[in-house]
Length: 208
Length: 252
Image (cartoon, rainbow over all chains, first blue to last red; front, top):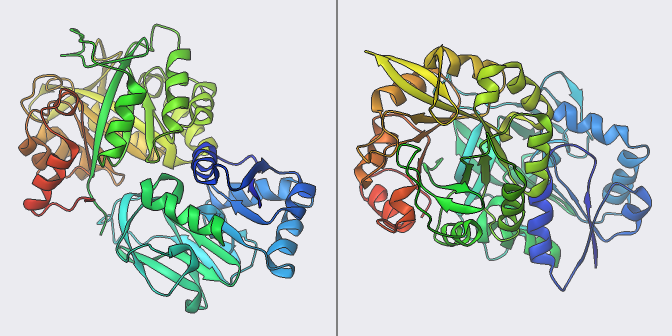
């Protein structure tokens, strides 16, 4: 199996590469690239994302043909893609970080700042929080409800169709922390930084 | 519910782990990569490397340590010490660090914080503030591992770096560091009350109660300690079980 981590020159993806390399050892070919010809023929995609929604979308758009290639992969060909952090947020129609920015529009919804309740909750939401599993998800196989995952973000994805939500986490409100719709997966938390339990999420994705 | 983080810090000099007592007297006690792996396996919520001599010496050693550690530890890794340029940050992140902590360079030029957080995202920019008490309820920022006085008020500085995009504050009391007499709770409280970003408490931990105080009385989101872990006085597990028994939520 060939899995591509999309390197679109936005943010630090070293940890994603390290964790996937660790889990993929000996069973999966891992490639880190933005070459759309390689992306087209791979079996699965990992879409990381660090920095702001706006900067990530702009970086994707900067690589000619990348957005269309990803769309074909996910929407037309229905092959598995895992978005991490802003990688997940970009599934939305629109994001409001820095400036109103159009997202990929794969899952209807918006990305807005977490309501910190007048400073009661510190932002960014940084650290280990429990996930509350909302529906059975292939990437949560053998993962217990209330497992701890590592988060670092100030914005949250609010999908219109709540049935895509596979887990939430409690921080000022119930924040969407993972989604699953058919072949499309996303985590707001960082499985690559979530210790053994995070590596298990990665393993589940690679085993799909 | 978001858990309070326990962060062991490894002070690194010339590729070896040391822990400075008041930043002066150094003892050698081990290989940083191995130490980090032990911490990560035993439940550390994050790992922090502080390159204590980086302000003056070459930085390649720490890059190499970060690279090796990042391949074995799958919890967040913060690296600080001598981070002065965008290129320094790029090098550390590419080696596998998740966050960098900036100290002197931010004091010299607050725009550096802005530039760095814009380029890499606030989530990876930790501002290390070394503060020393100058009078009642007044603390001043120091740089160069506590050697240089700046005349800058610590509270004003904390607010300013938050405005400029820092994602977290790593707050060290220079009066307490190495003394094992507990965090400077007043300092912690003042900074946590005046900022909206998470504060990591550092400097002075000698007992488990000190960690409890840092979180409960000081309002810290995370507690950082070096020597109590490093010399095996307490294990990460002891800390977490203790805090949990006192109703402080931690990742068990």
